[in-house]
Image (cartoon, rainbow, N blue to C red; front, top):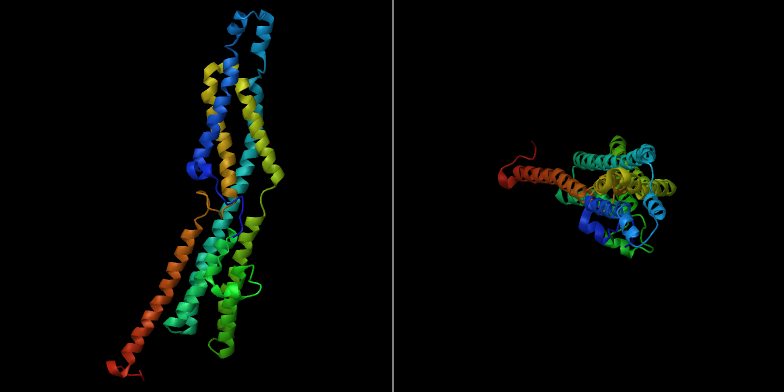
Length: 319
């Protein structure tokens, strides 16, 4: 399996989660904010050790920044974070729309296969396995964890297919084209089925575009540098006016600033295993259950019809 640094959760991420990490980082910034606060209380100690009053005043004024500057910087940084968050959430929502389409497409495929082919239970079971295999293969493909156990025959192919979702879509197309050539379906029915099958690869392509086209690394790095610079200088602008209240105020502001960036980074990649990512496993279970229900119900109805029309049950084949 291919490893991806964006998908492998670290120990801290697993233990703390997104909000836990935000709280941890904000707490560390709060500890750092004690430095300018305690600096103002070191003047008497320096005087006790014989430091001149002029040097004590210079030391107490060291690093002090006007709080008005951070008001302006906060407005600019807020605009950057708004764009960062909106861009990340747009990717997450587009991914959810694509997987919603996939749920609908698989259901429509199951219904159309059932109604247009009139196959028995065993044939419908084979179709169901092929339909539900695609979303599961797409999920693993987006996580770069291709599972060859889903189709053992893939290991016999030399070389094995590198794009399993495309391979499954090809299998479905081969099956449908075979029906057309054998007269199971006609040209109009082929076009009806094709309208659903081609959606599979279009959805796959849309997900791959989201997966492999990240927000500009330079922009992400620039935003993080701005947040770091803002939070590193913030306590020095608050200490003179707020004294020990600088610590809780810094923690609160750091929680919001860092939280926006951490959440934006988390939802930017919607196909992983983080708590903020899409529940692809749940969607695959939903697809499997509904597709099996659609095709199994028809198989049960077919068996009942055959049993009721057989001579042993007194059925009339001519009716």
